[in-house]
Length: 214
Picture 1: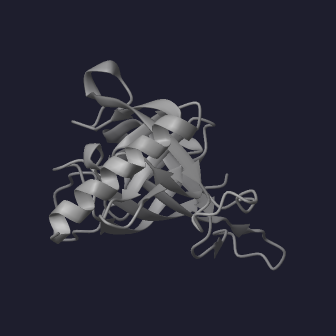
Picture 2: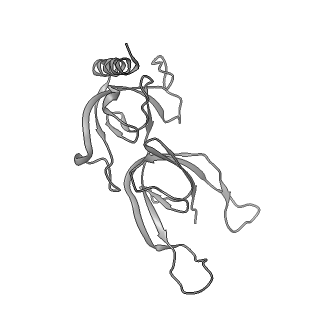
Picture 3: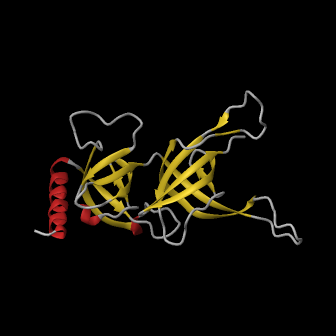
């Protein structure tokens, strides 16, 4: 039995196990910058069993850890797909047969905006970023957003200033719509973040963010 055949049998076995012990979910694949979790983007309905990354179901998953091992027929999902159902919304982070699928629980809905710099005549190329001319890159994307990364002090610089919170985010990648450093991220709760770094991992973007606190 070669590697392709082995991976296919493991995927099929995962699907069988999920049908016995899992729940029915829908998988969605982003096509553009609009909200991906809509009927036109649904690729398949399938059974999914979510367990801790360790693979053991003898105890609960650690608190505050969003990563899950997804038992399903992994031939039907790709990194960057969203799996939505009774488990909530999970972003498929990796799918590397014969290894299991790694999913990330989404806890926010975010939009990514690209600020526009002013166009001014002159020899000095410097210009401040203007939020008024920002254009949407991604809108209504489920994302995993967790404290982490590097925090920074507020710009007033007083000794007793609270640091600006740092976050790490994960969101599905869309061809031709890559976030960039200095983009603005807004979540459904009205919080605003500045993108400090962007790293591509397969079908997802990993974002280092700093919250903008007024």
